[in-house]
Length: 226
Image (cartoon, rainbow, N blue to C red; front, side, top):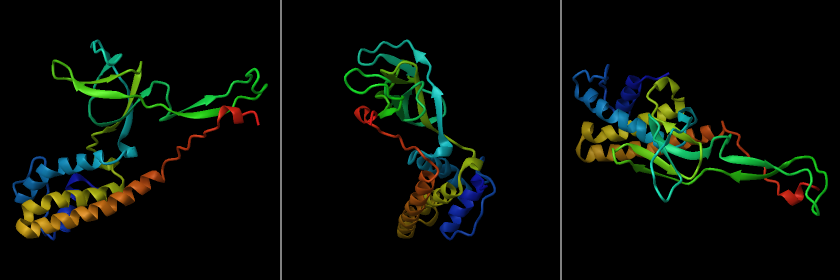
């Protein structure tokens, strides 16, 4: 798997820079390593925020706070290492869709049917992120015992899939183009690298979609007895 140094050197190669860096934390002293140290974390986190990447998606039970707010019933502490909240869910939700079962007997409707899936109910809850008086970030919602599904600020490059790595090299190259090449050439190369990044991003998203199989079955209750 590619390291952060590999990603930086590939990004430099995209720009036609033959220099290589051996360290960005701390920078080794070259202009290239200084630029990579500055832009690599931004490029990585920007790309993580662009999509709900499976390798970066996690869940956590939120810690409730005593924070009175008339518009919301509950307040929760903002979890650590969260780059972006994807959804606030009930604690028993397996995914964004919850399935309900039709009853075995509904008088005047249908009789003695075996329990079946009656509907797929979309369960993410409304929420709002604010700052408490002490400056800490909090999550406000009406969901009791809430669970948070979120994008983690992943820094371990061994968790990055190959297409994510390729996309990140072009994202980083688009940011390095101006400082390294400067002027009109830097601006043109930055634009070219950004276009390449969007090509690889589409491929990476498609690959992610092929690794998911979430297809909630939706059967209306009155059809369950047929």
